[in-house]
Image: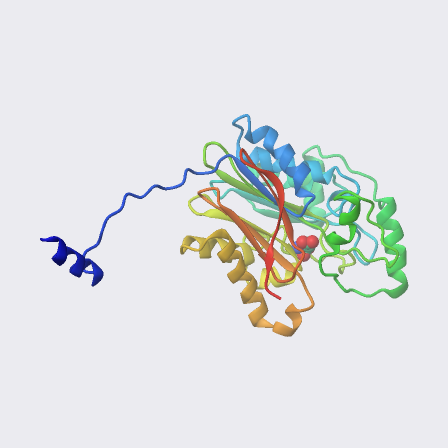
Length: 334
Ligand code: ASP
């Protein structure tokens, strides 16, 4: 074929020119987590990831760290339900789709470790309420006093005056001026939610995730949000990637949020595009309602690429890898 013919055919798209494909190396290990409070959580997970540890150990370590942090709406220092009781939700999922979860757990400091124990020693995935507590006690987790943290108690008293359940959008950002662990009491009694969701890939390329929260403050006693529900607050598929969420859990549950994000990635979308599509689904169902609430998704694929999207402005997330250690701001739709 002469040069003229070749150019003619290729301009008509009739000759496929094969260029060598240089695929980017997989970015691993890496850990990503919700909110700016994810920075010290990532640091904790990184200790394990950087010494060739397993991703499941890394995400548990990160979650334990935040559950121990008293000035945070995660763990027993978190905000109570409308009856003044702190109830905790958590879940963990590893690269083999082993998973464990607790819902409405009271007076136990580390719900994430109870979730892991369920995953590793029982035929079940989720235990809730009294049964979850009984399981924890039988497995040596000590029972903690049923007292509120100082901040939570003050806020609850103020909230009781109005007694109104009204989740506030991006409540987490109200305290950013004082840093992620600045005291959380606000004069108006508001402080509704703050969930730690994290996803990690270890140097072996295996992905795991964990979520821990005290859920939406002032919820009805017994309410469980998306956070401990596999496929809602967390989903891991080691062939594709993983996702986690934060925000109004009911909206995430309705679309099986993180499972949806992972399925979008399976179909070829980037983590950011996949999170965006999931947010769009929530908005499409009820555009007026969506204006009043926040949901943010955070995802990572098998290449170690990550991304997030939120319904509203204000969702941030933290990333730690060999290349970076920083807080990113998520794009948003409304
Ligand atoms: N998603 C959590 C829940 O609905 C709350 C949060 O993310 O802050 O319980």
